[in-house]
Length: 418
Image (cartoon, rainbow, N blue to C red; front, side):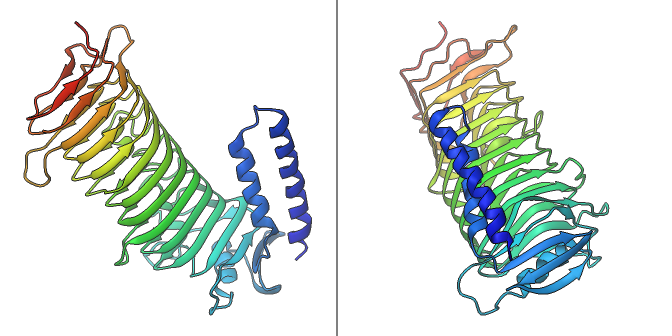
């Protein structure tokens, strides 16, 4: 397997060049260097399996032995994985050297894709799977069901998948360096979904360097996940949220950067829902021209956002609804289509009203002519026991800079229009 030496050498040279340039030129993107170094690390590992496209034919090798020759990319990758030692207790790496098409689904009625097995790492070396399924949209390029110690990295997905990656009831999962662009998906078209759909909660999941654009649905969604670590998620022009956390607890998110997530709709750049929490820490949310910038709803609790940078939301910049123990520490919200920030509660008996919400050190304003944003901050009953502190709300609403109605809610130190 000469690849491990020759191609690795070229990547090492590129990586060293980038490191040299970072030392001498501050304009080099540190994320680019980090991504390249991750590829260097992957390419210099001893790959147990390899998948190559030679003269329009796929060839799979495991431990240097050819195990598949054919025309199907998904089958080629699956054969390389399935021929690994079934009794392995450490991750073994399968490398995909070339891009290709998925072909149509297999006609079973179930989703069709590459199924990851326990102790498997899959590195696409920034190659692409183009999904060219029928209108049924049953291709999911990467699937894991009740798997553990798995890894997917450096993978580009185009075409019309149902989901780009679908992880169910799995543990010790790493997903890194994923680029998904799927404007052709017309039915579901979701980027990455991690859930508890096979009977147990997914646990110990780490994802980073994710880019999703032109998805019909959410960019990244979790449901029923314990212990989640997210580095950077960037989404552009998604039909749903940039990042949506459902029923997820013990999570740390470095950055959500969403542009036009559900513009004109009710989803948000970052949303928590369905009893999400506790122990959710989000370091920064950047949301531009989304339906909402941030949205928390349906019993979410125990959530802290350290900083927001929200502009041009077509509805509220931030909506906190039926949520408890929720904090936004600082940031900017501007030019929303409704309120800059609203604390609200549906009094239908399903979830407790919003309570113990803290919003502080926010600059909320509207600098458009004419101004559209109705309020800087609006709190409505039966929300209660909230704190609105040290916010600059000048020029933030056509009706009011600050209006609150909750029992025992405290507003102090805010700068408002006279």
